[in-house]
Amino acid sequence: MSFIDFFRSTAPYIHAHRNKSLVLFVTGEALAHANASNLVPDIALLNSLGLRIVLVFGSTPQVAGALAQGGSDNTALWNSQPIDRDRMRTIVEVQSSLRTSIEAQFSLGLVNSPMHNAKVRCISGNFIQAQPLGVINGVDQEYAGRVRNIDHQAINQQLDHRSIVLIPASGYSSTGEIFSLLPHDIAVSTAAALHADKLIILNTAHDINQNPTLRELSIARSELLLAGLTQKSAEATDLSAAIKSCQLGIARCHMLSVDQDGSLLNELFTRDGTGLLVTNEAYDSVRQATINDVAGIMQLLEPLEAQGILVKRSRELLEQEIAHFVVNERDGMIIGCAALYPFGDHTAELACVAVHEHYRHSHRGDHLLKAIETMAKTQGIQQIFVLTTQTAHWFIERGFEASTVSALPDRKKDLYNFQRNSKVFCRHLA
Ligand SMILES: CC(C)(COP(=O)(O)OP(=O)(O)OC[C@H]1O[C@@H](n2cnc3c(N)ncnc32)[C@H](O)[C@@H]1OP(=O)(O)O)[C@@H](O)C(=O)NCCC(=O)NCCS
Image 1 (cartoon, rainbow, N blue to C red):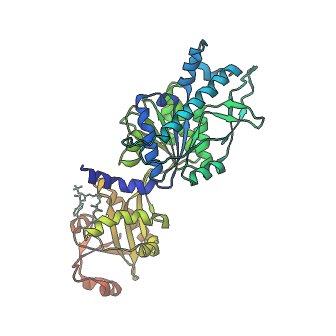
Image 2: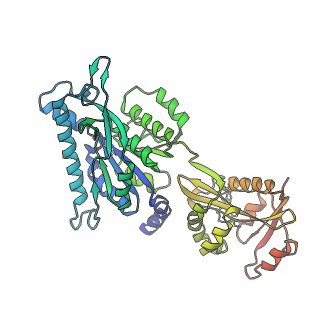
């Protein structure tokens, strides 16, 4: 694809993601990966494209490294042990150092760097309220805590100002103490509290975030997959966080691997992305259109109108007529539509049948036609007609028969454009 074609192909995704809230959880392992240096410019780009971003970052291997340097043993398991005062001090030092390093990278603005002119503001603060885990099986967990509350209003205020909100894996209690929290829990709780549109978990590669045969799973299928995974493995921890976030109302949780450079951009701005999507809603569905779909329908129809395949419709007209439309939505993007206009006498016009060119040849046109037929039947319509210039055979293959302008309802006959010279086809509904 040429650069121009490629850039144009990203436009629908850019429109679909603008002003959407995204909680991006980058694990400590992903932060330590060589590709992490490209992450900050990629996130800055998402910010300039209008996404509202909360960046939750883990620090597990970095804390383990600092503890090992300080002479502690069994550092790999530091997170599951009671966290004493010394350990908590190390955690705070490591998280502060990671936070300042991320802030510094967002501040880079040298000419020739990808961050030139980015002007990103990132903010961190006391957004996460924590409480101690307390005494478990007789053992005081000391500074190990759990999420108590997320100050979503304060986070939203920052997002409204286009700031990126940075959240480490710790929180403050009402007693003024700091507690170490599990970063997956923070990411899920924050996404739920914000009613985020997406949660993305970016980790190093494991069996399920980089498996080309696993692209999209419902909650039920994710639970089956989780049952077969080794407990507490990286993939099980990521997947159970994804399931939990969907159960809490987040429509889509993506699991990506940092090993694939640019996986974040790939997932958000290309047709099929690279990671695994866990979703609590139909990822790809045909449904009745709403007023919120008008912009998406316009984007879909524009190129077809420019080619003269469809008659141009203004935004105002689409808004007035939106109740006549069904749409095919895929991952938040309108990739197909069709409309039904009743003309009285049990007759209606089928119009505006369109499928985005990237998604053709997979029976989406058929699904739209079926949805229109169902809509027609509920309205007592017995016959539908269609006017077409270049798609005659597609309709003939679906049971439409050639008809004439004189057979059209009078009101449609009056509007018939003889210059356009569309052919008329008609089909009786069983
Ligand atoms: C017509 C259209 C909606 C079909 O969408 P789709 O999702 O690809 O449809 P399906 O997968 O159900 O059907 C694909 C079949 O239709 C055929 N087809 C596509 N466009 C066609 C056309 N203009 N004339 C005849 N057949 C056509 C394809 O060749 C394919 O046939 P095959 O399976 O034998 O290869 C889509 O091509 C489109 O949006 N076209 C531009 C808009 C348009 O012409 N709309 C009708 C205006 S009245």
